[in-house]
Length: 303
Image (cartoon, rainbow, N blue to C red; front, side, top):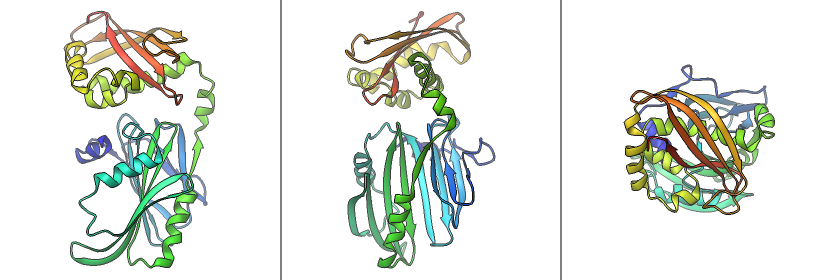
């Protein structure tokens, strides 16, 4: 998954180098989020402390590690856009199928649900030959276009402690950010523009595979990832680094051509690049069936 690659390549910034994204709400809850997510995830704060948090420069991906001194639990989570899977069950099955080199001789494997949350769990007797008697649970949340992969583990596990894992999953809450209350009233043009401006740095950086994964569903059904790379190489790469973008217009389209029944917005910017000035960039945006705005296509007047 892209987030894992980001972490491995160390392009994430450590706490203290990025805006604070995990903090104590009060003496009862801990708050965790990434800037691009429309919500804040909260957990009971009794005995819980944030050990590590890392957030990608574009504010869309995050990794968090917490310790529960009261119950001797380790809790970690990845937050990323829900691109690779769209439901809790689909994400659970994806993580389980992908596996992990650190899962040594997993036993008592269970795939199940806690309410609407799909999870898998297993018991690991040892790690690298050292007895650990460790229980692991991976619970998957999909909320407003973002995926949370929550991992809970406990060494020296006893069966009666299983309720601790269940309690963590049940205690997770997603609270809308205050700024998103106003954003919920945004016009389609404004909502689509926000999404386009999150996507732009990925496109500008030449991360064509990641930009492809965030395209509208109907676009990905018609254009392969390889063709998208070729298109980036022809349409965007020759322009060089972006110097400036000025919004010129945003026009609402009740039914986007090629996607009957789906709303669209055409957004245009007057832009300047390292190798070309006076470029008119057009972003065709579409509202997916789940209400999420996505980039359908990108063109320039120099294509």
